[in-house]
Length: 430
Image (cartoon, rainbow, N blue to C red; front, top):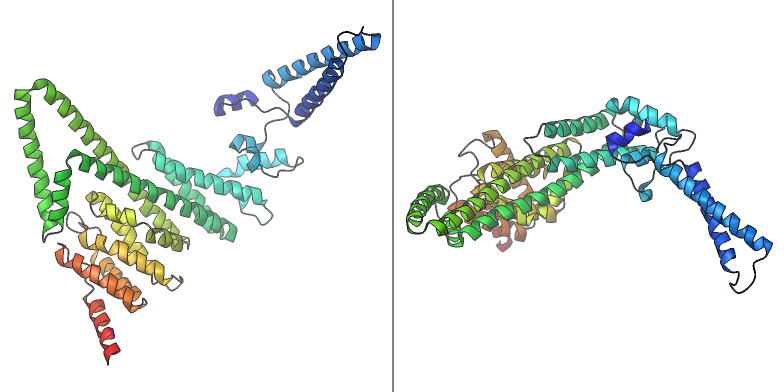
């Protein structure tokens, strides 16, 4: 068994606690003997007890070497502890009793598919904590595994199974595991998405900063989203013409320029694919947080994601689609009956993410939100606005009006909210 574990997990079997204690005791005895022998002055003539003490010291050090050899190269009769198999450090050690160590290990291996180990009232807290660490590890690996890998669906199905099992038993501790792991994964994934969009759009700006500046200006104009697509096509044609002329004039210089341009294009494509994968995972985590009653965690984090909101305005259409869906879910949850959301969180979410609804290509290339979903989001925005102070309503509605009038989309239409705010402002005068 120990040899199989060595091959499967690529580590050497840990020695038993009995053998380790014998080794340490022998080592301490040898060290004390060495100190006593060293105290004998060299100029003095050794007595019989000094020679005897020296021989005992040598034999003790030989015993230390033999014990060390046994610990390193011979399998132990006592198997490794579960926490060593799981890779936890000594600071994170679990409190398993020596009498139930082997029985708990065998029950864990036999009942792992149904997670029966952690669903009883008498379960140890360390086992529940281990389950939480396992779920967090799977969610971390999910963001690192490529979506094209077969192991990606395997990891997602495993995370789904663990969370569904926890929710099915309905124990508060198990539900807390789902919420904590998902909240941590949501924060990590949103940060990774922000960095991917930053690198992707940074490559575009470095490739041609003047073109990026012109694109941002045109996007701000009426029908700007349509014009930018034509500009991209025109830029591709011009790049092809210029590269042909450069090939005729200077073959060597052109080769290096094309190689650099291709490399920038490849890097940009990789970052866009990565951003799309992360956005899709973030949407999955948002729905899970909503299902397990922890959507308030996502709302708080979304209200502080101003950088992500800014980059999402110029992100890839498919990435924008996933972010629009996430924002739509969270906007509807702002006015949920079971949640008490502070006015500050409502204000920040409306301020940061309303421009995305106005400028995103939702429904133009492919349907992102249905008509009914758009109506629900508008109703949620109106209800959330009505709970804010008049000064906050003014800031949000002023920004919305500016974005709405220059955007190609006619959604969200907050005219009713704007008229209500104007009417409430008139009442102050009267």
